[in-house]
Image (cartoon, rainbow, N blue to C red; front, side):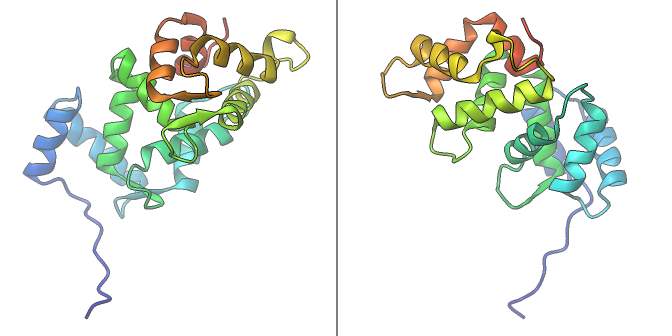
Length: 192
């Protein structure tokens, strides 16, 4: 009785459609198309981490290694921390990632790298961020421009307004809004 398992929903109600229309840049027809495609890969209506990484690597092919980055992206898409991504989580995150304005995309990126979800990105998280990005982009690690420790110090010096050796959400977003090369690296995975 009390252990009833919930049945995954693999349909969109009118309420779901209205919610997604008002919270994304997609129209009703596109939402239905996306949902049908989602169900082809996830007939039970849920996408687990392993499936997500496989799909992500197909959608975002890079010359480097993107598996670790895909794990971070999974965490950011899994907004309820259930270990699965449902269609609503997928479409909302995809919308921000691909069609959101600069501030929304930077906010999403902040959440991607705030690994412990404490509202700040510390040196350890910045280090992981650059290591993952540089590995994914297959940079020459001997090149001084890609020295992780040096990049961390530069960023903290520029954007850590409070001086606590961490970046708050606002420090991250405001700082990177005015740093085009870092924007390209974080949002488009392109080197300057």
